[in-house]
Every structure is written in C-alpha cells, then in structure tokens.
Length: 89
Image (cartoon, rainbow, N blue to C red; front, side, top):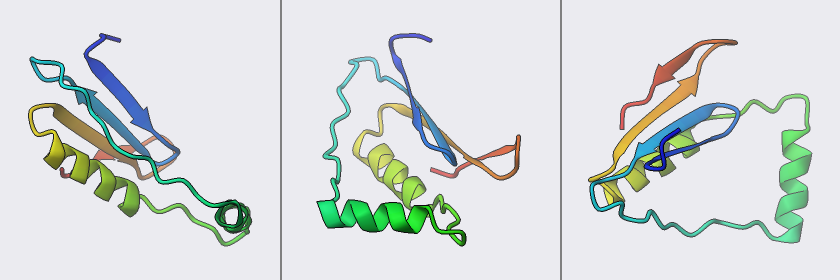
C-alpha cells in the first residue's frame, strides 16, 4: 500500500483515503466512553439481538470528507457475507 493511502474500517464499513497533493494531515478527536459507558456498550454488543448498523460510521466518514475535500474518499459497507456496496459520500 502506498504511503499516501489510508485504510480504516470496522466489521461493516471500510474506508480508503488518498492524500491530497500537499498530504494534509487528517485530524479528528476520538470519542471515548466513560467506564460505565464501556460496560453498557459491551453488554449491548454481546446481547443476542444486537445487529451492527453502518449509518453512524457512514455519517462520520461523510463529515470527514467534507472537512477534507481535497482528499479522495471511498467507503464501502458490507451487505452480505462477501459483498460490499460503495457508500455515497
């Protein structure tokens, strides 16, 4: 992979960012959970009815693509066991 290509993602969403000509650094603040928030998150994600939803991840990528429009943004969401669809950014 090239030094000017960033890949990031999770179980459902994959994002690839090609740097602009100036190689502008992408900066964003992570959101951290409190200890009780982390415990609640683990309880929810491990419950039998939990199904991941890509909408929040997609919204974050869309917002980053607006903040850094000179980079090339491409994102995909997994829609089947081995199938991905490109997200509209």
